[in-house]
Image 1: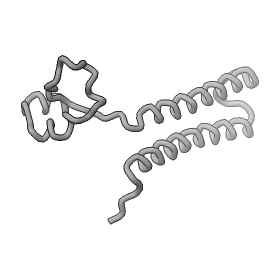
Image 2 (image 1 turned 90 degrees about the vertical axis):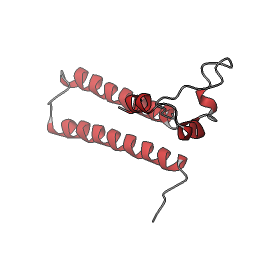
Image 3 (image 1 turned 30 degrees about the horizontal axis):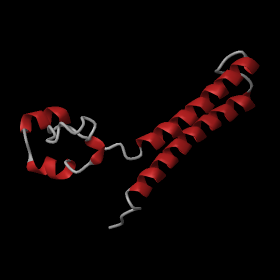
Length: 114
């Protein structure tokens, strides 16, 4: 929707003021000195989030593989390991949310209270 908005609005001095100075947008090379206005999303902590997500996903897949080899399937099994696996997966989810939030807050300069 934002791409459609910027295409409909046309050239804006506000857009050029905000994004012309970003070195990360120089992927077109030196021959294109004037940038075409469009929808811009700065990566910021994207690479960190991808690494954390990938690590959590690998741990999840290893857990599912271990459950399949020990219990013959990913779901069910004895009560203790079933609850332990569920707790591990919930903790992985909470770890991802906590680390992503921490990185985002750290990049923005900390929490801004009213």
